[in-house]
Image 1: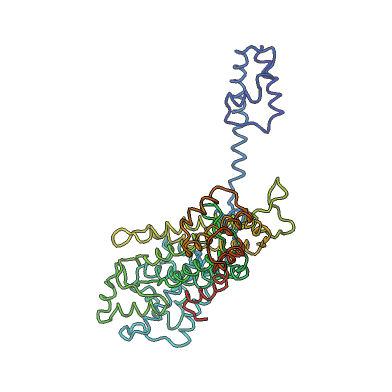
Image 2 (image 1 turned 135 degrees about the horizontal axis):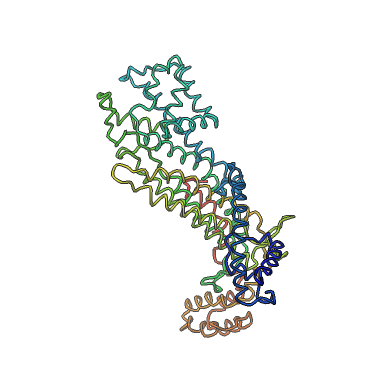
Length: 545
C-alpha cells in the first residue's frame, strides 16, 4: 500500500513535468525528478527504489509511442532543398557570395559542357573527308547544333537527369538526350549514331572538367584574386609613408611602414596568381585506353592522334597524347596546389590584419544594426578576416585531397576520381567566399595613426641597430656589445639614447644624423618600396606599365 499510494503521488508530479518525459528512462532520470530532499517522507529506501522501478516502466510504456509518432510526423515528409535545408552552407547561407561559380562547377555546368563536347565532336567528324558517312553540314544545321550548346537550359539538364534515371549512366544520358533532340532533323537525323563515336565516357568527361575549370578560373576565380591583390596594393600605396613598429618573435624590431608590409602580401599573392594562370589545362580524346583502338578499326586510314589533337586544342585546351583511359589529372594537382599556396598567403594576411586590429593599429568601421557579441555590447570583432581564414582552411583541405588523390588511378583507370572530381567546386567556392570576406574586411578598416605612433614612442631601443652600424663604420670597438649593454632588457628612453650618442667618438655630422634619428624616421626604403608595388606587380605579370 505504501508503494502504491506513493506511486499515485509520483504520477501526479510526473504529469506536471510532462514536457521532460524521456522514453529512455533510468534511475538517474528519476533521481533528478525526485532528489533526495524531495523524497516523500514516509517512504523507506526499499520502497523508494521500488517506486523508481514502477515509474520507469510506466514512463517507457506511456511515452515511447508518443515519441515515435512525433518522429514520424517530423520526418515522414520529403524535405525540399532550400537555403535552410541545404547540407552544404555554400548552397545555403553563403549562396549569394558564390553563386557565380554554379554556372561552371555545378551538375548543370558539367552536363552543359558534356553537351558541348559531344556536339563539337559530331561537327568535327563532319569535317573529315575520310568519313563520308557524316557529310559536311549546311550552315543552318551547324547553327542548329551550336544552338543546342548556346541555348542549353536548366530544363534541358533536368531532361538529361530523367534519362539518367533509366540508364543509370550520366554520360550515356547526354548522348540519348542529343539523339532525341536531333532524330527528326533532316540532316542530323541521318547521322545520330555518330554522337559519341569511338568515345569512352572519359573522353567526354575529361574535356568537360577541363572546360569547367578553364571557365571558372578565367571568369570568376582569377578576377576575384585580382580584386584582393588590387585592394591590398591600394592599402600599400595609401599607407606607404605611415611608420609602424615591426615585431619579430613578437618583440619590437626595426620600424617599417604599414604600406610596405601590405606591399609584401600584394607581391606574394601576385606571383601565385601568375603561377595559377600559367597552368596548362590538359585534355585527351584517345578512346577506351588511350590507343585509338576502335577508331582505327572503323577508319584505319585516318590519323586519329592528329584529329584528336586538333579537336582538343580547338576547345582551348592543351593536348595530352600519352594517357590511359583518363587524363591523368597531373595538371589539376598542380593547379590546386597553386591555389592552396595563394590561400596560404591570404591566411597569413588575415592573421596579420587580425593582430594589427588587436594592437589597435586599425579601427573597424561599424554598421548600424550590426551586433558584435550577444552579451558584450561594445564588441566590434574582426569577423570578416576570421571567416576568411576559416573558409581558406576548408578550401585547402578539399583542394589538398584533390591534388593528392587525382593523379593516382589503378592500372588504366578506376572510378575513384569520378566522385572526387564532383567536389572541385567545393574547394573553389570556399576559396571564393574567403576572398569576398577578406575584401569586406579591408573595406571596414580605418588606420589609427595615434596608436601606431604611440607604439614607436615607447620603443627607442630599436635605434640600437643603426647606432651600432654607424659605430662600426667609424671603427668604434665592440659597437654591438656596447649597445647590448645599455639596451638589452633595460628601459630605454629618448634621453638615455641621446646621451649615449653624445658620448660617441665619431665625426660630428654622423653624430648629428644619429641625434636627429627617431623611431618614426628610421624606416629605410620602406615608403619607396610600398609606392612602387604596382610597378613590381606589373613586372611579375609581364607588363611594362
